[in-house]
Image (spheres, helix red, strand yellow):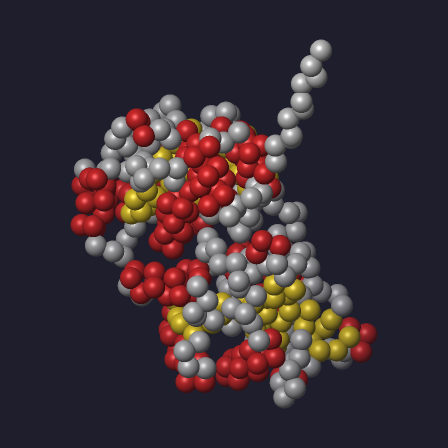
Length: 415
C-alpha cells in the first residue's frame, strides 16, 4: 500500500487561503507574515462577517481590511464601486489608496481616492473610467453623491477606517447619510484605535452581529516607547529643542505644535539653523504641498517634520525614531496618538514632551490616562526653571502647586 506523503503545513499568508494572484502581489510587496490584526481579522472577513477591529496604528490594519475584498474581487464584476472606504483625513485616504494599488490583483481593479483640497474635475474623470474601490473623506463623498458623480448602489463592502477620529471631528451625520445610500445587504467593517461609546452606537445601528477583535493593549501606549519630559519656560522652548536634537540625533522625527502659526514659525527658525532638513505640515497648506511633503518624509528626504495634529493619526512612516511634543495637546487622547507615530513594527521609539510650569495639571492628567509616571529629564543650563523636590523635603509652596492636587505622590513642586 502506498503511503500518502503528508503535505507541508502552510505558513504566512498562504495559511489564510488567499487566491494565487493576491499571494503574488503580497510577495511582490515583500509581505511574508501576517500581523496579529491581519491573522485575526482576515478569516472572519472571508466568511462575510461584519467586524469591529480594534488595534493600535502601525499594526497593519489597512492591509487587513483590504485583502478580504481584493481576494473576492473579480474582473467580471462590472461597474462599481463595490468597496467604499471612509477615512477622517486626506493623508489617510492617500495612504489607503497607495496600499490598495500596491495589492490590487489585476490592472482592472482600480482604486480612486476622493478628498478635498484638490480639483474635483480630476476625480470626476477617474470615477467615470470606473472604480472597484473608492477611498474618500466623508465630506467629499457627500459632495460627489450630491453631484451625481458617485453611486453606491453596487457597494457590497464598506470600511470605516479610524472611526473614532471621524466621530471626534464631527463626521457622524455625513457617515450616516453615506451608509443609508449603501445597500443594506453588505459587509461592514469598523477599524479604530479606540472604541468609545459613540463608535459602538454607530456599530449597533449599521452592523449585523459584528465580530469584535480587540488587539489593543490595556495600557494605551506602546511599551517600547520611552517617554520623558523637560520642564521649560515658553520663551526657552526653541533653545531647548536645538539641544535635544543634538543630543538625540533622531533618524526622523515629528515635532508637534498646537497651532499652525507655531508650526510655521518653528519651521522657519529650524530652516535657518538646520537648512534642508525640516518641513512644516498643517491644514492650511494646499493638498499638493501636503502630498509632496509626506512623500519626501516617507522617503526620508525630510528628517524633521513640524506638524499640527493633522498627522497625529493614520500616517504610516516606519522610520520615525522620535516624537517631540513642542506643545502638549489639550486633548489627552491626542498625546497617545501622537506618540504612536514612533515605535512602529516592533522598533524602539522615543517620545519627549516640553512642559511649561503652568501645564503641570495637564501632564498629570496624561499620566493618569496612560497609567504611567513619565520620567523627567534635565538639560544643563535649563535646570533652574522648575526645581523638583521630594514630598517630605518640600516646604508648603506659595500659591497653586505646579502639578495641582492630583500630582503623583512621588513629587511636589515649587517655583
